[in-house]
Image (cartoon, rainbow, N blue to C red):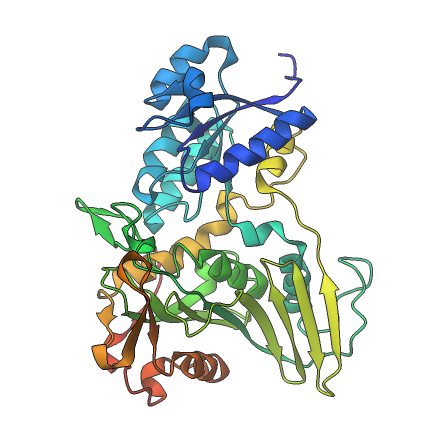
Length: 408
């Protein structure tokens, strides 16, 4: 059989939300001749320019395409539809680009991985932070066991003095989201819908990139690398899912713990960051900016800029040349799926008392902030302890739960 040549044929399921970003990426790749959009699937009418290649189901698209069937299916749909759509694409022998979070349950991760292996096809997961080389730089430092000891030339020489024994990987995400954000779709802000998991919490959807990056940097590469996940799930919005969360992922081996404080009810909106903390310094990565700062014990700072790989472009290259490694393959996301399972397995998030939640703006544009949250997040990261152990007045001990991965 001859090796395919020419632009990789891509179809997109879901043209709104993040699907619109995929359309822009594919338009760029079509201009440079590496990919071509051959069809879209959506339950509603897409933009007028896509009407000629629009279908209501993946089966209808595949039948219509004939010999020009897609080589990649990109899936940008509600979380609870990811697995059946990906399984359908893989069964047809097609590689998949799957938006994060890839699956709503840990068991689904195994099912999807086995299906990809049987089909001999690949699944790229859209964890955008993973496309930045900064994650690799920090992960190499952790793997070396001592900040500052990354071998010169492996990921670029890092000239700062060693920063000591690594004590933790801290993950901080402080965003503001209004009522409209949680009313944008029927599954927004939900843990379950029509008896199915949708897992739309702050740690598993809007700031999932940060959690996944923290796990990758810590070197937690498999579910078996996790001993326990401690969760404190709270909510300021009138939603079912968590919007203000503490997580501590304790490792089963020598990896550092990953401690996360995440919210969509911040006092001020900030770009998220992941930081290695050592006994003599730190290295903080703002993954949305592809920028990091290493700080030594003497306060000396070194700022680094990092390159970025587009995940769709990477998958397109992989489809044409299987020796091109995927940047964010499904297998590498198993620890994140375990954290998602922990969050979905513990009791539902408890509301924060009205006395501590302050609303700003009106109607759909109104957004909440939580009194004392910024300081509480800083302290929780510094100590590795949940909000309820720090004397935070709105915190509750009964909101804390611990989960361990299945042993079999």
